[in-house]
Amino acid sequence: MTVYPAKQHFAATAAQLGADSGVILVHGSETLLHPDSDTEYVFHQNSNFYYLSGVAEPGFAAAYDISTRTAILFVPHVSADEAVWVGVPPSLEEYRAAHGFDAAHYTSEIDAVVGALAASSTLYMLPENATPSISPSSAAKLRAAVHEARVFKDDCEIAVMRRANQISSAAHVTLMREARQGMNETELRGRFVGLALAQGCSYEAYGSIVAGGRNAAVLHYTKNNMALDCADDVVLVDAGGTYGNYASDITRTWPVGPRFTAEARAIYGIVLDMQKAVISACAPHKQWEDMHALAARVAAEGLLRLGVLTGDLESILANHVVGYFMPHGIGHLIGIDTHDVGGYPAGTERINKPGLRYLRARRELLPRMVFTVEPGLYFVDAILAEAKATPAVAQHIDFDAVALFRSVGGVRIEDNIVITDTGNENLTSECPKEIADIEALRAGAYQA
Figure 1 (spheres, helix red, strand yellow):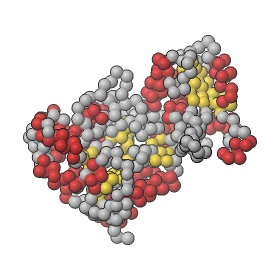
Figure 2: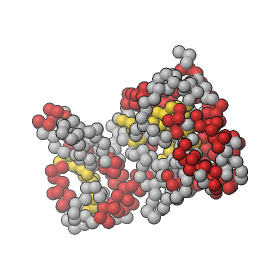
Figure 3: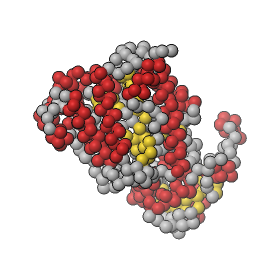
Figure 4: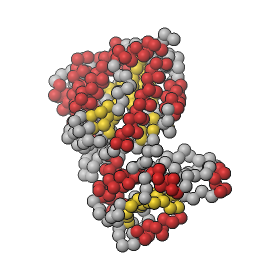
């Protein structure tokens, strides 16, 4: 049996806290009911609590004595009546052993146990659980420490994320192999979710995006209800499963029919070049915003070759013209949460420029960080209208050429990478993205 590294995660948090004594007390989420019913909302554990405990069930708490490095799990008592509905739970000892704690008690004993530990030392709690005796600054300090600890994944976490990516990659491949013209976006989403759950994922890591045609120009499109009637359209599938409470986040864009149109192939090729350049460059001590800038440069060069952009390359970059075609950041940290914590260390400000203002991280790349790399190019009418009304930007865009590619909607390609000591490992390598490989899968869908 694999034991969850709760003590290591508490120790990592204490190190970020900079404290050699004190007690950390954290509470998990509780079950919530729909109003005026006895039906529960789907339970989702507090991410900070899961990181520190490995417990995905409601009603738990955990404590850590920093000086003695003692971890204590608090378990809700299940009465005989409750067991009729929820089953007989593991014993205290079984919970303790499975999650790597030194001791386990029922939650009714929290006050007595923690009170004795913290009688002459500082008690740290997260803001969402803090009692009136906990200062807001102390609670904020603990949250910042947990967030920073979560940025760096240990071997256990990376192994779980590798499996999440394997399962989700296989589901993406199945969609590319099976989807046919005339299906609905909903069918593809349902197929993906079913495949992910069947292989051990507990739920979608986020609301899946299955966007055909012009819907691919909507970054977080979630209606997923259009028929895929046009073979010349592309369909953008941004979907990932959560395995062992860790997310995957993968995007592939492919033709509804067996082949890309010339226009879609051209845009796809640029996005693929953007992604390859960034993944190749990702290594320790690089800056994440520089990876975004690299993607923008590759995009500008490609769009210049197509005739969508005109003029001087450096002027295009200085005026952030690519931000009107890629209005989001190059990617984000990922872990327990899809958009994981820690992207902006204390004192780091956002850059209020097109594309960059939505960059979800600004920090130095270091080993054991896990990022998505997700460049895209989109033809969004509202943003292009703004570009047309901005002379410094409009001078570099051939809007007649833009019209030729508008039907593509958007293309995004997204992988998940771990920063290593010498470069990075692509966790999504089993999901094809080369044009020839995608078209081979799509042709197979029409040969059955």
